[in-house]
Image (cartoon, rainbow, N blue to C red; front, side, top):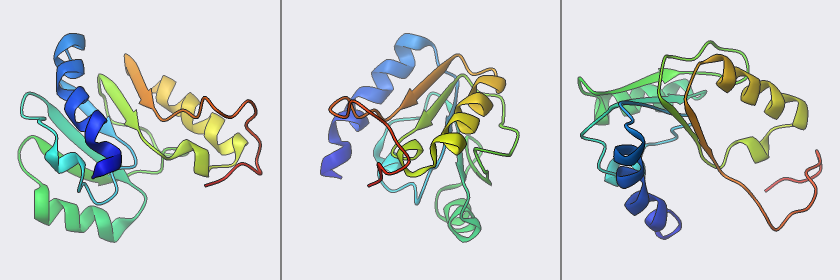
Length: 130
């Protein structure tokens, strides 16, 4: 929770400022930190490749405005959204797969992409992993 404190506080204002109505969060993971973000003004779509986690999230957090789907960001078509939040994911992919995911994000028609960056690293190689 400490690592997400700043983003949890900043996201609701950013969503209002940008007029976001639909958020796609991929990967959504266990939705723990995101469950502490005020997303009451939008439709939330969480996607993850882990089927059991998606099922658990549906039971624990699902509602009319919060839904979860099994989504592979590299190969699957993405739901229609205004913004894609892709936190701490792309760095774990091979460069080729990361580029495929970004191309898939672009194909989705999203207006915005919010993604983790590592500005202290001058080069991104397949050997760079956390």
